[in-house]
Amino acid sequence: MIHATAIVSDKARIADDVEIGPYSIIGDDVEIGSGTRIDSHVVVNGPTRIGKDNRIYQFASIGDDPQDKKYAGEPTRLTIGDRNTIREFCTLSRGTTQDAGDTIVGDDNWIMAYVHIAHDCVVGNQTIMANNTTLAGHVHVGDWVICGGFSGVHQFCRIGAHAFLGMYTGVNRDVPAYTMVSGQPAVARGINSEGLKRRDFSVDEIRNIKHAYRITFRSGKKKAEAIEEIAELAKTQPELDLFLESLRSSERGLAR
Image 1: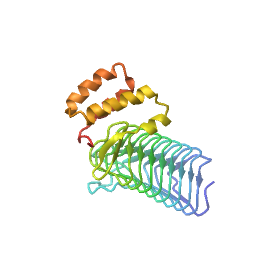
Image 2: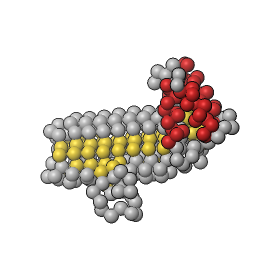
Image 3: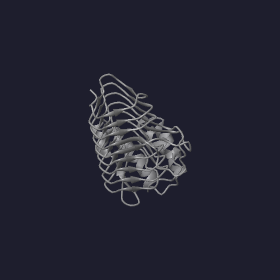
Image 4: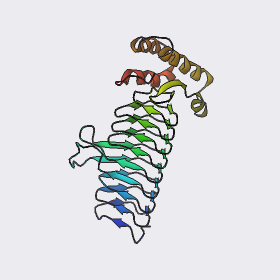
């Protein structure tokens, strides 16, 4: 299952059924789980853990040094979950000691060509990152987020679950859960109602989320006032919990 031209370190831990294509290089302290397929000309450096049933296409760079001038060779990590698709020329860096030291990608993500996931990012599950999406360092991306092609996210920003970034969007503030943004800089345009329908949110749930969005972005209220009002609604509308948590945890301000 390992091509004769591949170079695999004796210090790597590779499941028996892993496929490694021609001219790929697997470095020290790399762990690759069962069912994962790595195509040709892929470089994986460690410490990196890759879970089960992933597919990594040719010319990807996985687990190399973070692009951070403060990095001084510390043994930081990259952790990738299960069933992810990582397409051509993607770059996923390890973490830094200025954060948790671990770049984390969850499960079932669809990561298209030329995507960059920088040091200390935390990516959830079931996300889609279209071609040339770029996450700067320390970015957190929630479950089910969709990033349009050529979208970019500034360091330390948070993108809430089920959010949608339009093509060429430049995010420099936090994006709450369920919210659609576009533009440079990103501006809130509404909620991702079509995505919520596809994920079986009910008509009532979507209506309640729209109402919470209007309270936050269209009522003229300050964020603290919006949080107070939405917190009351969330007592009987649990679908608002993700949105409310996004507001409370925001440190960079909201993309308005």
